[in-house]
Image (cartoon, rainbow, N blue to C red; front, side, top):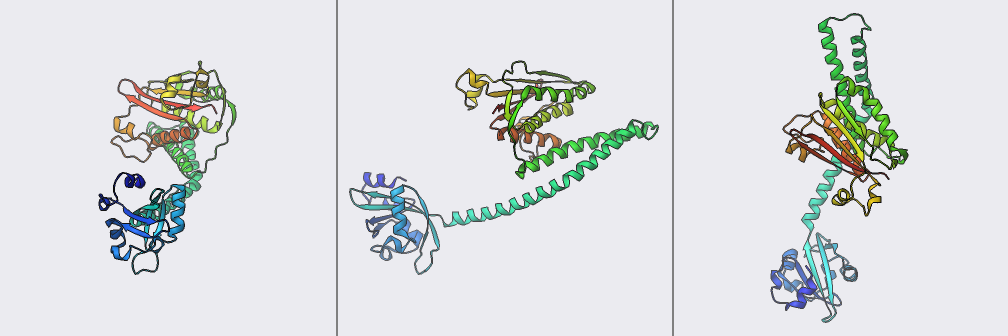
Length: 375
């Protein structure tokens, strides 16, 4: 409340006791000349025990605090005395104004004892929870190498057996080995994404920004996945012809990870469907509508727009509303690797001061649209 304006516009006695906060009226030296009923309620006392005494009798270091609040125009959390108690047992949030015309000081006091106590409890619980999360993440990260290594062995040896290294296989043996090989690769994918997410949560990934050629990176990633798309008979199109600024100053490994996440989503969820990745510079209106800094056509070239579309993957409204929450339990069961990948995309892109949006509907598929600054 703007307490000084209140007293300038009304007589002090009008509605004085109806105000929701405690009000002190003080002389310049801190002597209390009036209080409202809320002050009496806070201190559980009577006017007889307050009027004529000094503000410092009720608030620890009251004079110094008042001078600070009046001069700086801020609020302060202070310790307050209760009747018959030697030590402060209340916490008050106070503001104060000095009326130069009347030479009076008006103090607004709100009891913040319970709120502060609740905040302290919440803070303590948060600290305990954060410690548990940090210990869990450290344990899992320490174990991740062994777990992923074992899965690679299972995948590799099952693949070798399927290729005939151990001799001819019966039809049933081939069937079971194919299941083992597929499941181990899927599990490796899911766990790798989950472990990377834990690493981000632990703040153990430090970005190393340096200059690199974005188009060269795009080409090299495309070559890595080209055979996989062909083997799976997925129609994949890549277009970066409108990308004119190719010098990028970000963490190249993180940008590569972002693009690999997109390609792996294509591979895992496209079944004879079409996937496309278009890369260029965003239109000026696109940037302005999404609160990116862009003043003219030159500024648009400081950003890169990625549009990744997959025809086979559809998210419902509930999923879209919680698309970047790895631990959200929706009505549709999704592989943990997909949910973790989407969360990773969000974290990496926003860490680079970019942003990502997901659009999905029947007979269209899903479009992942994200913007990254080049620097």
